[in-house]
Image 1 (cartoon, rainbow, N blue to C red):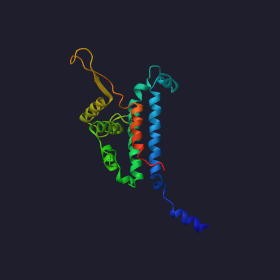
Image 2: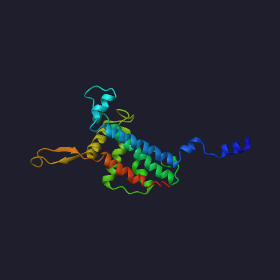
Image 3: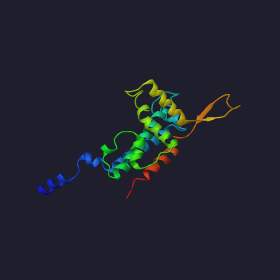
Image 4: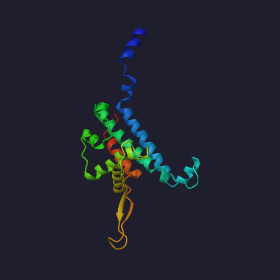
Length: 195
């Protein structure tokens, strides 16, 4: 009986191999999506009540504090759902390492139009510039300004007020709102076979 156990033990995947299973990638992507959703709702109508419940002083706004972390979690979740599909297609993690979303699209065989490439570049940037550190180790003013410009392009849209060309105003584009994010996430999740 002990020989059977030793044989079974030797034949089973290592812990790392087991954790590299596509389902683990899919589940972690879903966990990150759920966490982004929790932040989205914390930034909603009840943000002051949630901030108070968490012990923050009056005036603290989840709707201000959590935006960068929300975008970071959305970006991480998108990265992992794409990697889950690649793992399910038989690629090893070292074949899709890194955070370059354009590369993940290439490996998935998915085209990227200009608009979607910009949105995905924003989510990729959010992994580095939003929610973790004030600046990454290799930060430069040029890189930070570039990130701000990309964020402005994605998160806002111009509106006309008064005579054209006199004043330029921008409003939220809604491009990363929960409904748009979940639709985008779902387009990648649909590539993952649940069977």
